[in-house]
Image 1: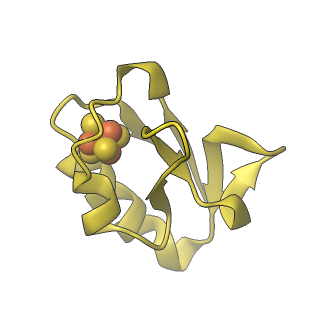
Image 2: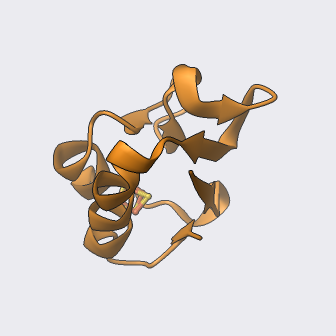
Length: 73
Ligand code: SF4
């Protein structure tokens, strides 16, 4: 299990994380990135928990972010 947090207010909507790991990251209605609903914690767009088999995807998406606002632990 990996935990993800996104500093959404600093997202520049470049789409890199959506392209790299669409299983976890997607564009929300406000144009900023969010965790897909399946993996959100308590319905929070900016917080997620993903199973072990998606950890590499989560990290690759975070590494793709040019403003480094996705944190995986
Ligand atoms: S890669 Fe970073 S800046 Fe780009 S859409 Fe994802 S969270 Fe936003």
